[in-house]
Length: 439
Image 1: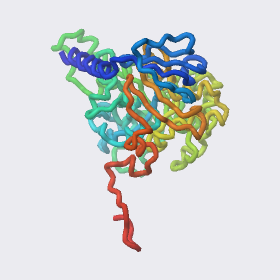
Image 2: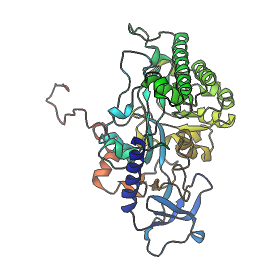
Image 3: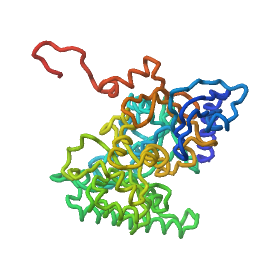
């Protein structure tokens, strides 16, 4: 009954979005960066009822007679950006009681009215994977969201085939989850980290087998264990394991665990991916990298390279980008593609890494990530080429609804404002007495 109700709610949300766009909208004259194919000059994008109806050259696209026509000459339109690793919404995952907490759900702590989501829209981001932090070997379940304008988190859900909120699981190894010097239950060494993960996944295998043997007979089912249930979903491929990892040896440990237990990993950060790019590609493990121009902070990231994207592309691995917002401000997400191209990555793959590759990592490539008929009408209107530092996000659309407009003074604040524009739950002071500091 719950699943049926969830599907009904999801359908209702789609219907409400569609009702908001009963009349087709046609953007004409723009350069279309379709991602799934070559760029189209003097292109036409037609959207209706939350979906893309057509995207192509003016000569090949028929504009509906009743369409609202928007002159987009001189502008560029590309798919909405997909951020595979973000912390917008101020959510937190596991606490200090244990290093592995699969039952924790980030959805229970996300504030969708937080201004961080508005900054993300201002950066052209339309889909995010909101994650708990990396201070645990497993800090909880992630949540995939569409950045619709919503008042409660349910308004932003992306639902899976069962009608449940879609998401993965966040794991980590290396310095963060070791918590060196901690007196709590955290591992302290890399070998012990891997041992604890193996122990829990082995328990999950046993739990899954007991459930299978029960064959639906409630009297034979083991006591419900929410933590093991979540791990079993990862074992069955229903949840992607998003794995924070930096050093090359930690990357190989993550790949080893994935092979041993059969879960689907997406490797995140991979600061030393350039050292083991062939191994990552051979394991068919997607890698979501963060291309930043001011790293630092942890010794294990000292060998990070901007060439990571290029090295992974040459090796044949699937490459995506992420912000890890606030590590990289969501408003500067597109900059990563430009930096990656400068470091040797192809333009085509860098643009794909912002969009379709990320969608593939989240299992959403049939819905988002490219300008193709039938996909969700998630797109960004830009002032120029997406790789130019001079280009600005003018508008962001989610499912045919404009959710950011740089021409709107309120939206513009979140596009150009400083620290306070993105941290509305922090206290800020406008003025100080001479000789006094912030208190």
